[in-house]
Amino acid sequence: MLHSSTDLLIIGAGLTGLTLAYRLRDSGKSIRILEARERPGGRIHTRYADGHAPLEMGATWLGRKHSALWALLKELGLEVFEQLQEGLALWEAQAGAPAQRVQLPPDQEPSYRIQGGTSALIEALVAGIPEGTIVYGEPVTGLRREEGRVVVATAASGRYTARQVVTTLPPDLLFRSIPFDPPLPDALRRLASATDTWMGQSIKVALTYARPFWRTDGLSGTLFSNAGPVTEFYDHSD
Image (cartoon, rainbow, N blue to C red; front, top):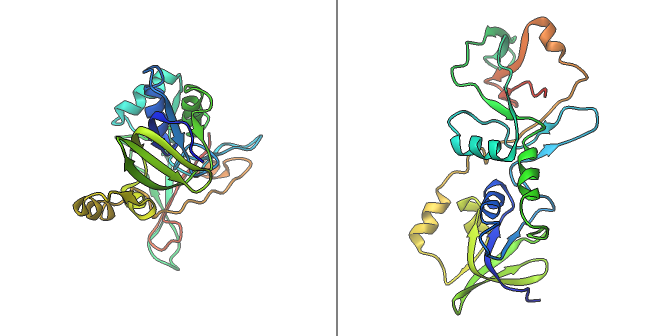
């Protein structure tokens, strides 16, 4: 099935793809976003449950150095709060050794979190672009240049065409999952396969409690371990 053509097609409804569509919302260009998942956000994923603090299962922190993100949050009217990182931390030097209590030094570059969860940013961007821009459950299976346009094949419902295509996938994932016709240069392919995806090999786990009981004992909720399986652990209270 051939869908109507657009000026710009964006692959991925994560932070990059949504921000691009948000910035171009008044450009007069027709824009479509194809997202393989059934939700927006990409590697930003906050889980919500009534009566519980939001659980960040994806990207969580930002710092003052992320000036573009700070500006976007201000534009969207989203507030931040500082990550609690004071008191005592637990440190496991090696497997089988008892955990030691260590005093955390003052953080010269504190980390911050978005009020309401990181997905609040995603929800604000989705609300700021025209309804129907995003097509969910539409994994891209191929890109082909054809008569001045790009034909985008998908696994779910056929193909789309666009004057321009922007992909927001991590470079290595892009080349492993989507074939190009004509093929892109070998040098670019080698560079993409050698480009690491930040936190791409990480696994995240969350535990929930009714109250932060560790604070009554002077603990920060921070844990470091040389043994694992959890190597870093932080208080995610809202």
